[in-house]
Image (cartoon, rainbow, N blue to C red; front, side):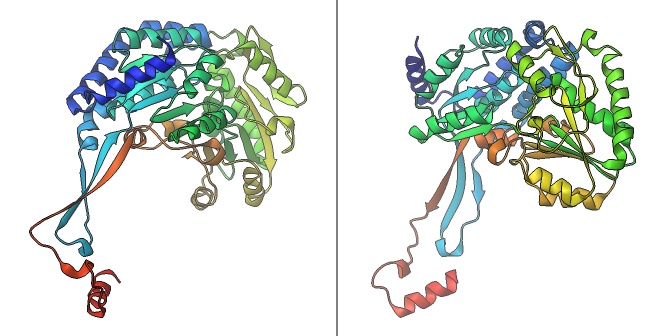
Length: 454
């Protein structure tokens, strides 16, 4: 079946109304969870083959997050899908108002390679809970995970309801030529622009989960050892191939030396004295990205790491780094942390605001006033104070970017809102009809209207 026929088939299936009942949605979520449970070993193996992820990291950052999403919707879908009464203004007396959520219809989910299981399946969960049909396009750079996802979906769901399309750029292009009712894309800003442009041809709404240079600030903190350990966790998780990894670190000048010593200690604790030989150090996804990262490294001073072997790059710290250096001109997306010494809060703000709005923001400081000031002053998708990455782990916090780092949110209730259209419905009663709105329009009627509406 070609892609155009698949979209037609899914639209016909959606129009049967079978996906809308709450009982159906919950049954499908349970089927998905059971299928993932049965396929855990296959998923672990695929993630290891594609990205050399340890089982602990795979469960923590991929499978476990999907389980959390499913559990949330098993508990909350009925409430989320129930129409909500809202206030009716006095000018519309003898009426009731409500908002009625409905699924968009046929949804396209395009997922990336860096968290290839989680970033495909987590939005899928929200789309199912909202009552849509879904065509899922997993990443071609991680073929083993893509195939496991394909097998899970094929043996669990009717393809007219949920289906997987595999392939590279040709498949992506063919999909984007179709008319979908919603498109959910996770990936680079450059490809996000293409997705949005193609969606505009059909006036299709989109969610774009992109990335950018997410800053990390270390300023006025007495917890330098813990700060360095938590930054090392966030930066070197998945070999830095994380959209919300701390991209660069703005660090108070007098904290530079103790920070370098502390992060060196953390790296040794995580990966031993020879990280390139450690069994749990993830791979860079392919040779192109290894070459790209090593080129970025070639012109910078390295105080920790910087070596590569067999598709891996060891955890690396660069210092000092100039704000205008090549590595500061693009998202790094690898295990390389530039340190930029700063002297003032004003310098921090000007540096961050010289880049596009980031997907994530991190600050390590004991100064509560500074915490509040940065959160209120700077624009970003989401933040963690005195840690990294962890805001993504909450189903009660919407996840998404702003500006060049994306648009729209998901996780928990925000996924339901993303994949649902909310119809506004006003019900008028027939037993009373006030003549004020009808012609002829008199001064007396205007006076009464002013009392109601002014």
